[in-house]
Image 1: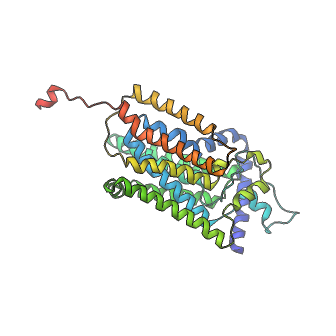
Image 2: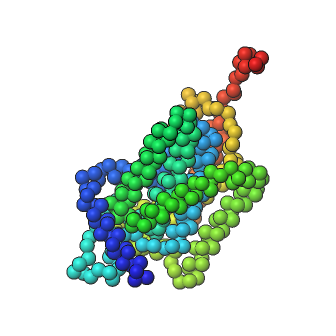
Image 3: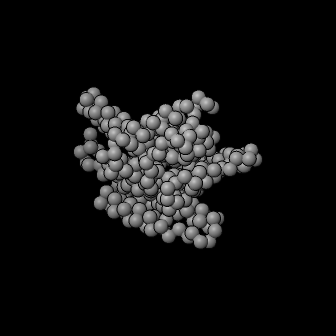
Length: 347
């Protein structure tokens, strides 16, 4: 434990170095960390793909959902501090030599630090997108593929820098997020997994979702029985965040599980979409944009004064309805038949 604390001490100085070197680029780094926020990816960027390709949206949704579940599980098991509160709690520093790291509204996230959710989810999201692009660019030779991979790792580098700059994560938490993200991507994109899920009935798929929820619920109560408060990170964030108004309930692990469960239930009912009609983008894109607007309005009007149960149940239902809509309604209303010309028939 002493060795690990010494490592974190070194990584605090790494964060201070990053904050010094990149201070002129704070707005750029803030844009990066906002753009790759798992919530923004899940509620804005990924649904936009539903207007372009139902099959790609299906792959992306499955990969990101399972990755976020794995991230939640890992955070609870590892239960690591974030830099902005570890620095104030540790005995590695005294009141005389304790440095102060810079923080703002992007810093104060009320969940454990390891692995980085930003890095883990973004790694999976980008891995899926870049894999599709790589397949398309393969016919143009190796240079475009090399450029694509450079862009992939460069993006992950800047996400890591942004998370360290705002004191959200230690370096090793960023690296671990990338490693787990790549691992989850390869598992989720394997044809065996997709074929296995397709073969299962809707009831069995819903059963798997219930099983995942029971595992996380069991982990929650195991911590309680061991005398560990599952919400300890929320309390630490409140204690050491410069401004409590920076904290948002939507970034807690419990809320994340509710959001994921609503979406995964919808996915389980529809199932992985391996083949779908090509979309008429003149219809599908406006439809998706309208649905996104209604989704954000619905989430902004989440009832906050009728108890925790109503709050969570409402969030679950909203995420279920709109995910189901992107998977089922968009291809049903905007899908177009493939017209085969007479020449191709005769050939």
